[in-house]
Amino acid sequence: MNDSSADTPSHPCVDIAIIGAGAAGLFAAIWAARESPTLKIVAIDGARTLGAKILVAGGGRCNVTHHVVDERDYAGGSPQLIRRILRRFPVESTIDFFAECGVELKREETGKLFPTTDKARSVLDALVSAAHSAGVKILHPRRVESVVQVDGGFQIHFGEETMLARTVILCMGGMSLPKSGSDGHGFTIARSLGHSITPLVVPALVPLTLPTDHWLTALSGLALPAELTAIRADGTPARDSAGKSIAPVCGAVLCAHFGLTGPAVLDVSRHWLHLLDVDPNARLRINWMPGVRSESLEQELVQTKGQSLLSFLKGRLPERFFRAACLQAAVDPACGVQQLTRERRSVLVRNLTACEVIPSGTRGFTAAETTAGGVPLVELNIDRLESLKCPRLFLCGEMLDVDGRIGGFSFQWAWASGFVAGTAAAHIANAENPIKS
Image 1 (cartoon, one colour):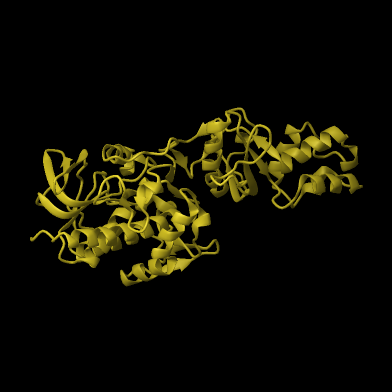
Image 2: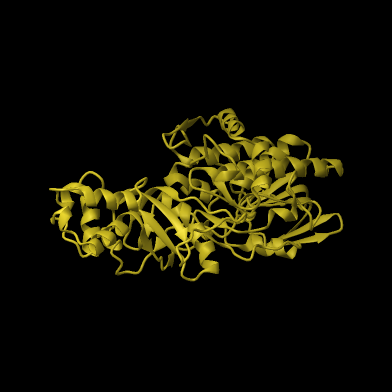
């Protein structure tokens, strides 16, 4: 991959400067250049490794998108506004784009789409190649320190260099995986240009920690399906911005020495963190037997005769897990089901189908796959993703208050928002007489 480095000549005056050359930034650059090939376009990125977040995504395979995507797969901003962006560049367009670039995608049972190479590098190489082919100059590594609005555009300061750009697309990411360049500096620049940031900015798609002596940490390495709900201390579930109860998250949970991880935990993490902001005793309710209600399990236990708990639970849960759950309920798994007192039976049922867990925290932004929070969508012209605070400034990607659930949804947001911002910025810059090379 030819990522332009320190020997790349400086461009003191450009039509469009894209600040941040991650997934959204590269996509914005590609589509801006394709929309108006005569424009002088540069993408600037300060990360040590260009496209680092792409390279580590999906365990190094890069989950490019999901076969079905809609606004219900996202949290943060208004679902109606999110839908308008997603419809501008749907999944089919993503598949076609990468196919055009020589990257065929395959659909797995989960609905996730990966490159057939199973290598994230092929995705990044395709994006960089497409950018270069479209005439985009990539300056890397160059950390942008500040962006100042001036007559005729923006002054961009990085190191000892200054660049003048008529139009700027800001896509420096949120705060997740700071080593990838998403260290929150983009939010500082957005504020300096008149934008606000949501009051709450927290890690999303992040593992949760438990007290070191919690019984689940002793099950490190054990994975099993579960149903998770973020609940208040009074037992009521978390609610979304519209006041509706957030549905339980179903999926795999992996017990770890530090706490809990796995797809379902990552998905529920942002809901728990948002609830924690208003209820310091917020917790998780975990049903380790998805689809089984507490009442029906208790009734089944009452009606079961001539069986030990061991034989009753065998095949329903991993033995290592139900032995630990029995121990936590002060119940001998070898005892007969009919020997259980009502109190012990209720405790066991609760441990299996309504286990309440109070996380001690998260693994933080360094382990988070994305950020919950950012620049509110209401501060943008949603049809162009142009700032309503600062003309000719466009924003896209993780900097915005939109975060997708696990499964390629955050990347689809990057492609869609990058497309909208890139094409719109090109229209604006082109209308203002492009700079001649």
